[in-house]
Amino acid sequence: MKPLTLDGSTGEGGGQILRTGLALSMVTGRPLHITRIRAGRPKPGLMRQHLACVQAAVAVCGGQAEGAELNSQTLVFTPGAVRAGDYRFQIATAGSCLLVLQTVLPALMLADGDSQVQLSGGTHNPMAPPFDFLERAFAPLVRRLGVGLELQLQRRGFYPAGGGELVARITPTSATMQPLAPVDLLERGPLHNAWGEALVPGLTRNIATRELEALGQRMGWTFESGQLRQPPTRQNEGPGNALIATLEHAHVTEVFCQLGERHLSAEQVAKRLVDEVRAYQRSSGALGPHLADQWMLPLALAVWRSGRAARYTCSEVTQHTATNAQTIALGLPVRVQITPVERAMQVEIQPAP
Image 1 (cartoon, rainbow, N blue to C red):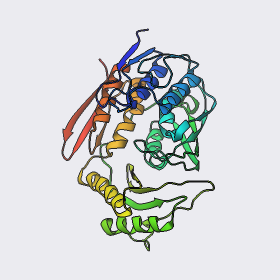
Image 2 (image 1 turned 135 degrees about the horizontal axis):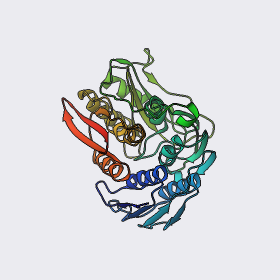
Image 3 (image 1 turned 45 degrees about the horizontal axis):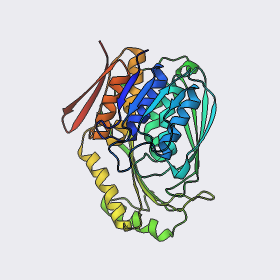
Image 4 (image 1 turned 30 degrees about the vertical axis):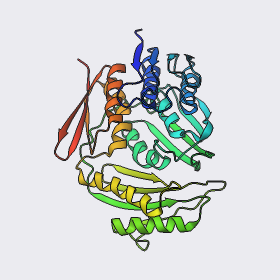
């Protein structure tokens, strides 16, 4: 079988090319040869978090990997048969659990039985989707394809300490006896609910209060209405800070997150989050920029397996998303077309002729 050859410096030049490449290799059985890994980053090559993705892929399909070592910029990955089962992956240095999960999820979506994946490491990381995003925004869309995906957060883990734990339970289409079915998502629908929450385990409650007050002032949300919340801290969590906004629309739920940093005031964190939410609200696209990126590969798999095209609209196509589209088109017999529509962008994925 012809290898999937990828240049890791393409487009945004980060770890997404590696993760998508590994996922495509596992689902198609094509060997992966990737060079110039993370060439667009200040420290190129494989970091510990990316090694965790490679090691997870090896475990899930019994594959082999050459070049799987710290700072390596070249990897040759030869997949085996994907095996359903119970897996446990520990990500060192508070690397993102969610990015490791997204590496193996496409393969386990198509496996011959149920799987459980336990992950420990970071659940709220810079440059990675937080757990709340996957649980509320991403997983419901995956379930619409006919795949069972249930996520359970056992403990939050913030960078750099880590210590978070979560469990993902995946029921593939083979178990449900339903085909992987693509869905169109062109409109977000009416807004049913919206709220903000501040996570501050291991920190003073005053930080959460200030963040929520600033968020409420800008969004018109109040404590009395239940739109400003501080969830309880689980045992042994922290320290860390995340401010999250959730918008529940009829057809999609969007989640936006800003992490607190030492040099940022609570008010600055809130302003950054509001800026993200307002950018989404100004658009008519169904998905925000991060969900548009994360949704592309599962939907492309459904298009490939069903032979039917599918579309979605989004508020923005980032360079990250454009790079992902290019990588997917190299690895699957599909075409990804991105076009502007009124106050949004449209992504259409079609079976290759």
